[in-house]
Length: 479
Image (cartoon, rainbow, N blue to C red; front, side, top):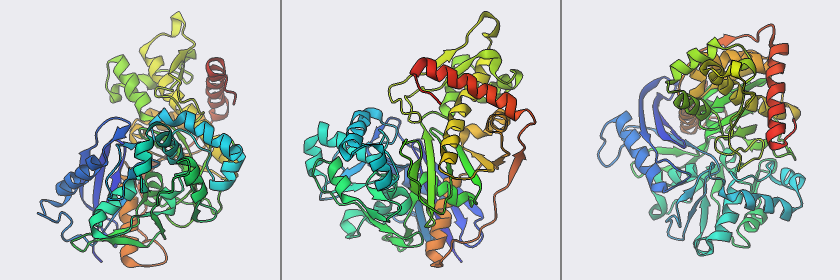
């Protein structure tokens, strides 16, 4: 059938997989780093993509995609790429984890009439991460740049446009329902932009958002003739790459932590915890996000002077509950709960429990308790969850799956580590190439299952109760 490329343009790096379009077998891979920071020149993503493609495909000269039939990009959600009439960015892109727009998010909520109004309008209540809040920040703090903004794109939209030749090609920028649903001005339930909310965010300015494509539609072709699929957001790409089924939820522990599941109907959570996204198949993907996941473990390992393997060993030496130590892991502020200015806290310290193994265990449990609260919010929207799929960098530590099964109280499956976001993008590229109503049926993932332990109800509840008490004590947030 041909060869397809899937791209995961994440916060930290660009990952590329080259797959057989019919079977999904991975043929080659490539990777390149992204700059650090919460504001990045989008050109850096383009250069990283070229580098990753060359690593995966070799030096194709002027056309690194020579011999590739189709490509799709799954990118980090929410980031603001504002471009002028000539297609040039008016400033560095503001990424999802840039919290400077928290005050603007609060004001937008008030201006529309409260959280319920936003949930009903677009399925999402603005927080600092959401694109609409970043647009308001731009209007308030850099009005000249806001005046020059002719188009508003997301990171994946930007890369898809560049693949199609960019502004010089005359190709109209494109996106999909999945990534558009995270902007705060697209209604997943109605399948359309709320241009009134876009104008509200930019204080009356009316930039053009990209056209929204169906899941199997093409955005265009590269100058060399490779089909460019619609692309999507990273979480939507992961769901497509895993072949997420009803009753399953993905717990993704990367830079951020996310819990999401497929749903046949849209959600509208007025608490703001559940983001009512669309997915990459034409259905919906309710999602809860935290800002702190894998970096909780890497930061704790750095504090203890060990690597991640040693942190896993230490944590497995400790008893569940870490002998009373509780870590609130809000190392970079937090999104769920909405505490953008919070810092981390270690509570319950006593002479008898101040040991490295207890701190290691408290880091694992603190990270997972935040995610357990996220799963509760998902279930409160009548999304059934009977099994968890655990992916992301932090999922590689065996203690994480063991603690998750205990804290969540459901079976946990750890798929074989792979680039599921990029694989989802590759599957979407194969779908657009085939032009069929349904995505191609690729081989299911391989993974190890772990049942919930017999004491999950008691021990898991005790861990979560201690975490809830600590959070209320420090931040006044009740469960």
